[in-house]
Length: 52
Image (cartoon, rainbow, N blue to C red; front, side):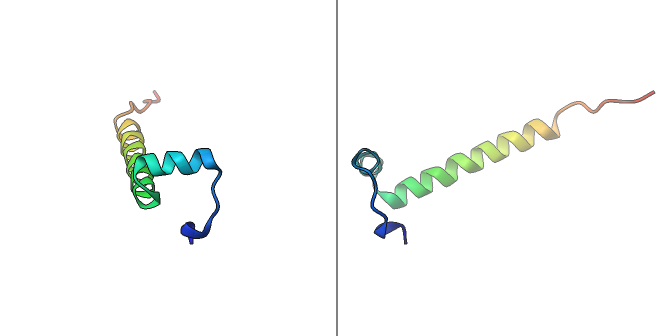
């Protein structure tokens, strides 16, 4: 599906520099997982307000 999309030349050069569309997808998923883990850790360790 993604292999048939026509990309602008600048984006196509960037994708090829990274290593191809598959590598770009793997990198995007990895970055997303890191952001999710850091967000979850920040939420889990945030102080909870104690109401009197």
